[in-house]
Image (cartoon, rainbow, N blue to C red; front, side, top):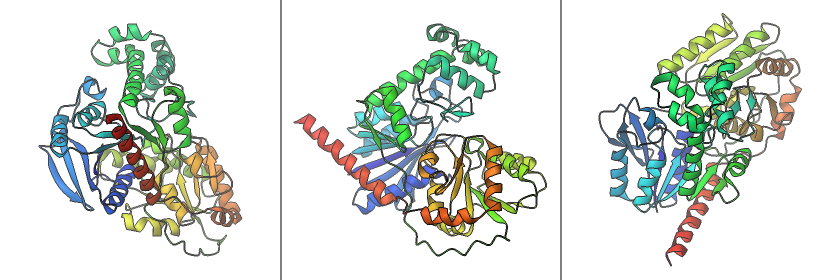
Length: 448
């Protein structure tokens, strides 16, 4: 079977949970005898290129570095995507497997794949759950977990608020009927964006419905995500649950007995991004002060100006605190060893993620997780049994939890003992193999 994985970024320049997931899945599919390739856009690149990464051919296609409003909203194909479409026509994959929709990866690529005879599967790794949440986090007003019921007025106000519009003005703009918004949205610039937001949301919901109808399967990573998509789209939507997994189950080495005299080591590992809750972690660190025996470390890449800006802001928030260090990003083969060396992993996410994968990796080596009660974390961590959960954005509660664990570390032994085996990519790949086979059989029945 010829399988093409399509995502917004890829290794080795971009290292994130989705990229690692795709690389691990592709490796197992190659081992099963499939011809597997990967494709991803490159904004602003001079031309298309190919290279090998971990045994898979990777095709990178250039797209416009500054998409138009119509391109960003998937109303028209982004300039440059036609190179991917032509490449697919030449290779003719049996399966196009999309991993989250971004500019250059969306409905137009589904259409192009269908025209060359491919079946199309999409796995959504982001909080947008396709085109359902325009804010992309499923965190209403950036504060509370959303119920997932998407409506033009409700979602327009939330999205405008996230863009910096004062809440009262966002509420007024949300009262504009989508039909009127479609006309007002043609006004150039920010005014048109604000006045046309309800129409944009209505268009997104229509795009979600049309996209689901064009897919052979829409895969979500959490049970909560599955319920949200099905409740919005209806029971006949082609929705499937396939939870995250780690590359392999590591050997869990015996841990040293907890030393109450040593500082409790707490780390954040991952991308520096506001939606990952890094500022909340920094604020929690600041309010713990020197009262508790705690040590903190951030391990994250600083490969862009945006990441450097976030790191600088974190340092401003925590101030001159000797308990806080910033380490180099971890190579993939060093992650497990590092996670086994710390007492707690902190995942203060402010978005509805399928994972994060690093939380699973930590638990696989026996390191408990303190995180937020949203998305995959709410299903990965059992509150008070394998770790602790607080509300997204509640950095005061996070600080209290960290101080409580530092004061009484007996909970660490209980949490470690309660962590069972973690799901691996072998199980993930096995479920996809079954899905692909069902799709193939269904198409054969339709042709007979």
